Length: 331
Image (cartoon, rainbow, N blue to C red):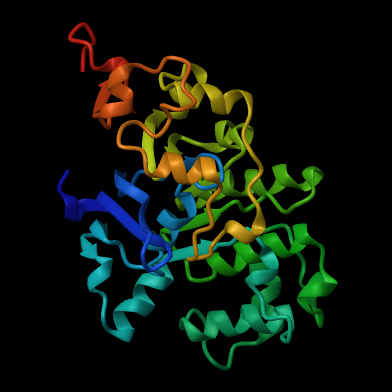
């Protein structure tokens, strides 16, 4: 399949930030040489998983066109999104690629009623006529998501629960009939009793409506439940990628094995924030010459400290690890 026939084509994507003082600057590869693709006509849920500081959200922001990559290519339906320079092209792209944020309260203006925001979105993207009846449109539309117009009529965001608002956030994103949703930690701020209803909604969107989802999470349980493919990220690198049953069922990379046991909770302040604030361990790992996991890896070799590993194809998976560089390993 040619690049222009793919829904999303990402090649060697890199984003470098510079931190530190004027005299002691450090380059941080927040996203380092990342490549993956999503085929057109084959809806899937593709997950980006990893601990806080792994580069997931920076990657998401580049996919949404919110920040420009330092190097690399992002093509949506054959169009390089970095070259979108007209309001008409941007409107078309934003109509087809929609975000869902971690905090549903960020989606809606606290000064506007929720019903007005949904209705205005439909009008602004020419989904409905300017003269369309608001109550009729919203009653029909919200029923698809298990919501009723009476639940939200006349109400502001703060008057709704987090679960209600996140379902509305997803409903808002789907008003434009997108081909791709980019969902950044969409259930991490929702009560545990409601998380599965949101996760099941993503599965339903894929199965019934053919929507592709890039699902960004630290939660491997929900990732395993809804994903078709998964990419494990570490300090800007994809270290293992493939079918979710293989990656999480029998992980190859030592870091993927570690994630099965324990994963840190991301903080709200560190997400969707262009300023990078690093712990001592994070800064050390980001600036390592070899494998970023070498300092914590139980199977570390001398070469891991000296050289960045290459990518190897093992059992339908791409794995970036020196353990698989042996001539005995079939790649």
